[in-house]
Length: 514
Image (cartoon, rainbow, N blue to C red; front, side, top):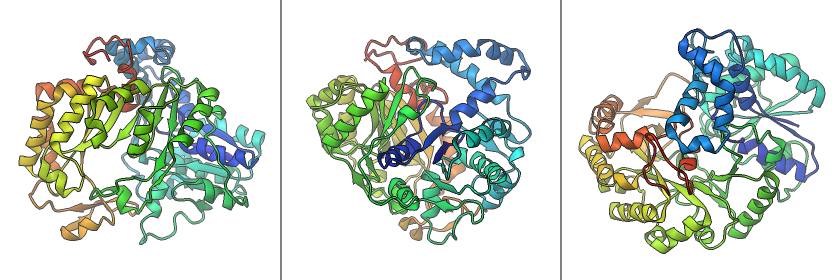
């Protein structure tokens, strides 16, 4: 079986989905090959010549090889200004590849005439793959692959909206080239589309099989393989030295779903995902094996939130490598010794969904968080040398301008303990139980939309939220300083490298040396 990871996604680390599927297939002695078309496709575009339109582009072209080499070395991450320059120059070479209605960067792909949430547009892309920016790459790479590997089936992992249009161009091209080879699609975006019970079967005549959720067991069943053996992801089948990071980042999932699963308006809850988690010994065994085969410089835990039981285990026993991931703020983190043990285990950064600095908003969202506890935990993590990547959500039904300003005040008050910030405007998931209490309307006319629009009970609609963020929140000097140090395009994927031990930070990066 041939497994593809399509463009566009951040090219900083290997794709976890197809690596996990490969592990399951090979555990049953079913041959497979992995191809990261995202990494290969972006490098293909970056290496194109003859598009140097201006001074910046010509300089970016001249510096491309040195910038790419620097991005793969640890030295660059000791100076944020140099890092920023290298990333922006590499990204410039992607930007100038944009044509007509298409724009592209290191993290996204947009077409102003075609929506990734419109099935007619996706079918159009499949029928006219030559209109896709990656078509020249597909025509150069895919025929040789099919001839060499002669796959009996092709799997495509579609996780992000930025991959959708390119994935369907790829599918359309595959159907032209090898109409007899069945195409199987899975991944986060396919799962979200399939979770809507009112939606008819997806993409008949184009995709032969769609798989929702954890794909290992359904894929094995589809291939006629009975049972499911224990397996580890097979990252060694991918070009692990070619990603745009200073060494191999090991993506790893300890669980699927969310152990809390109570937050209102959460897509995980709305889509009805069940929680599944591995125990501490299994996690350690798998990580130890993966470490031997891939020699990672960093572990990226992909969990929605690392379960507290595993954090407790990590604080006493961990296989000796730096790591980061999402966690919930729990009472464990009120213990400064616990936080210090996490640091000793290798934790360099925790991503935390704080969402709001108003207690009433948190309570109505059923976050299970207390602002006083949040403040103490942020202090503990700071004192322990663990960086924080804080996620805030504006425009929820419980919030108004008054509550949003309380969030501004909370971050201002705790700015010394906040390493990075992610600001988002709330989108209400389709089929959310809470939408029945609000006046709703279609989010868009696209039939594959994942959200529903609503009339905000306090008149705190998206336009007003954007104005507040632009005119007040981002303008606060202490908050602006936090936002300024976010790594461009790679954001949280590269942030841990600026928080490692002995990292000397210069320019606009963190002043504290962890």
